[in-house]
Image 1 (cartoon, protein in one colour):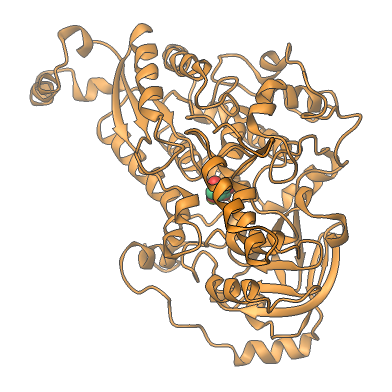
Image 2 (image 1 turned 120 degrees about the vertical axis):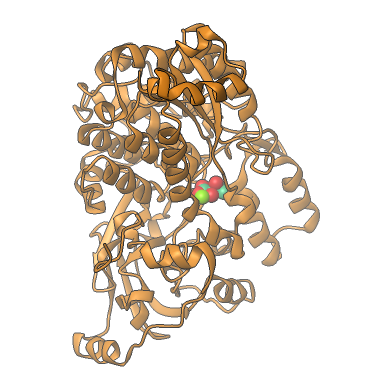
Length: 558
Ligand SMILES: CC(C)(O)[C@@H](O)C(=O)O
Ligand SMILES: [Mg+2]
């Protein structure tokens, strides 16, 4: 046992004295030491139930012969961090979570781990840690929130944010907004649409790191407690069979995740996190892989914000396995990948059934023949940019319009809310990238304001920052290289014509090469927006959006 390093032999007598201090019995000292990584806290609604999940995991581990020990992971609520300086501290926690979990797990020589994440950065951060530590590991998330109900319709956080835009445009009263406020988020859990947290929890299931239902069983269902118990038992099985994360998260498994991402209509943030997870297992994931996959993968689900169905509906319809089974019918799934069930993907999905063809469209009748995401390139984004095309209205798939340039999100919000943006405009928000932000802010406020004010079918938005899974419309993010390093987005001037062609996968600035060259020569880097603390260190190490904003030691530093 790995934990023998801290439990066996004369040298380890002091260590044993400390396990005694923890209340370990002689019998427990002989058993595998299982770290249960708890992302519980009382500020994230998606995490406030994780104490219950963790308790259930502990019961499962103990029943199957292990000794569960809880260790913590931090978590940010993107909804509460939205639209202010706090959002600079969201993506950056993914790497803190990966680093701190790697540190705790190796420092204490755990034999196995159960990861209990739920919201946006905990899922990828812990998947990254799982790959690094590479002891047998199973994931069980906290589960999605139930949809809210307003005036007889299901609703969620995306409508809540859009209600604010609608109120600014005089299309909704303050009383109506208040009603949303009280009803949009009725339970604990990760917000109820196919937003980032749920996207990543579903993809964890596809990757083979979570049991069936990990992505979809609602947070408040007793079924989720059972799932957590089973996750605790499963990790002991993984331990006995010595099946490790890097046996599961292979290149093929990651490509399966990318494929299912397209069918589910996952958050654009998946295009930051899949490359980062791939990097940890030594697979160089280029975001442009998404295009050929998207080309052959039908979009089968229109959960919020793309449509009026929610995670609870996907769960009832058969969940992630049912979607995989549909895609398997087209030969799009690699069935041989190993999973934490101890079985292959093919064996897992063999009996899965699509129980609601409106929530999970059959492959014969998809929402669209191509997948949810597209990566656009061109002279404005030589290294790529990302759009959730399944949430773009038809009129905006091809669009040309004058640039309205803002050097931060806050200025753009003032202009949008102040009625300064006209139909046809292309709003450019720059110096919000991984380095420039720093922290690549997620911008649900401007996308929701555009949608809520009724400009969704005439205004586009491009940025070197990123979006929420709840964002919809012609919102093109992760534009790389970013403005802070002199990417072409830094050279855009007010009124320049920007041309977007999503079917042709292009994003171009209609300015001559000579003129761009001239502007490039005149460009000088901006003073950093943050000069102290973690964000400063982060900005010095972070790579670009198209590389998943992974951290790298700068060239020339050993
Ligand atoms: C607040 C949200 C909806 O969770 C957002 O952060 C996302 O990325 O989906
Ligand atoms: Mg988010």
